[in-house]
Image (cartoon, rainbow, N blue to C red; front, side, top):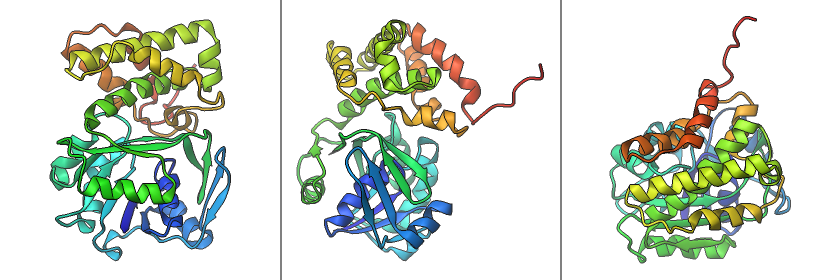
Amino acid sequence: MRIAVIGAGGVGAPFGSALARAGMDVWFVVRGAHLEAMRRDGLYINGARGNFHLNPVQATDDPSQIGKVDFVLSTVKLWDVENSGSVIKPLIDGHTGVVTLQNGIDAPERLGRIIGDDPIIGGVAIVNAAISSPGHINQMGEYQSLTFGELNGSMEGRVQGLKDACDAAGVDARVSPNIIKDLWEKFVFLVSVSTLTAASRQRLEFIRSDPDARATLIRLLNEVTAVGQAAGVPLSDDLPQTRLAMIDGQGGNSISSMAIDLLRGNRLELPWLASKAVELGRQYEVQMPALQALVGVLRPFEMGSPTLPDL
């Protein structure tokens, strides 16, 4: 099976390397210092799930070198979804599946406008990892999984082929009959945790243990669930409680990618996460005071570290 992974960060690197180690023909499309390091030294993945080194690595910044593939795993940041369409086009033909593994809820729709809807397979990646230095990935949590599904709910055909490949690679994978619901269930969790860890610049242990931070987390989980329900997504009333139980079961050292980006002075995915939820709240007339307040706190950092005012 031939697989192209667009991006080799905290999502693309762990899953792509697992598939490569299982014997799949995996190519990473990356650029800059990360590409140079991978070509020179391979790809190192270290952390909670153990350490391993993938070498050699098939990596390029020119997708035309790869040819057609069976699957594309699109793992770029949300602001790059539309731009990634030009990278993906040379890789696909009539049978290729393109799995959108971005955070947020609208990547399938946005990418579909660029490459067409037929290749799109919605996906949800659960993993806590990030680039620590070029060619090196740090995994901060043990649990990781993939959920993916055709937008029409089909459980057969190419999605089953990808499930078989994941099984062979030891990747915990599930084919979903309602991937939109799965995207929203992650969205509820992700918006709440990413917004609060970023605004506080704290890891999960603080968010869970501080009584005021925990109360805010619960408010956020309830607000985002309510807006999803108002949008017609069949989210259960107990979703905030089940997401909170999942958060309590995670390692306290975990921190969201948005918080990492903020601490590094990088651009934030805020417009497609918390700001998107607030926008939907206005559309469906759902009050979201806690989330709206934190969006206001984070917005100055949306494009990276802002210039501070003269004091």
